[in-house]
Image 1 (cartoon, rainbow, N blue to C red):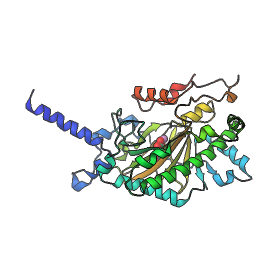
Image 2: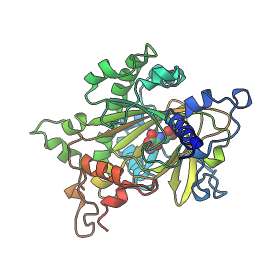
Image 3: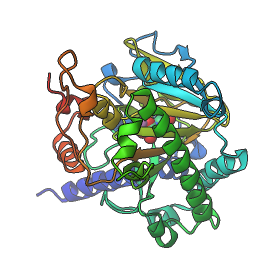
Image 4: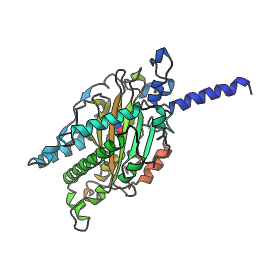
Length: 374
Ligand code: OGA
Ligand code: NI
């Protein structure tokens, strides 16, 4: 073997392992041009057909339907429930305003998330894990062990079920991180439960869901459900047209509550076009996940979305994903199946999803497609 060969391979491996440390690390440890990164490394360059500007019309803004949470609790509830149903059918997304979570709690969470990614790399690296069941996991890209081209995104995933785990294992640095994140997760869980109740009502399934509990008027299986929080960090990118912060995907659970800072980047697919969601300060972007599309037998849509990056600002978002307990089977509600509306999806559980994750290699194919009966 030629003497240079090993050396070359080692260099390649070193470069490769550097990408696994994340985009923030890459940007902070770049020694070209006085530390200014001017080009995107090859590892992040998407094939032309997958790039965000492959079609000129991919830049239009979209004002999502707005749902006023305070109004949902008032005399106009039935009207708001109708708007909610329409948004879930036509967009799979809505903006939630007047949700009652204080500006402090929201700003503190965004701020704590940002400060986590500003820590020295070694501090973040304490939470590196390839175990998807780990209650805390720092990583990069979308599906780090599978992606050939990497996404311009680092993440911190925090499992909130059971929340008692969080107190010992969530990051202890920045010093206030754990407290802020625990607080934020319980507020979003409460909001999710109130929204889920409205969604069950809009599907005509509320009575049935409540009666399941031996006459107790509660939504216990929803209350006991899973919650995963994902803090996403998208550093500013020197060539944003060549890459994506997140590829097109749909979310796994029933509902996702997404908090974004003032920087736009989220795009949703609507009527065949990619449209950019205008951020509304202190609001949540809420979307229907695969489980709710299945549960509603296709009435509500789990819609593809993706994230653009930009050259001037970094962006932070916090996604809170909610579903039933992990071991529960999700299936179309029998009340929504009849001759005119046959069952459209196979039963689904977490194991099915894991099988899918480990088998797939193309990012754009979505899990939901694999669960459809026709
Ligand atoms: C997600 C997601 C969008 C964003 O975390 O699943 O779609 O704007 N995030 O970060
Ligand atoms: Ni998503």
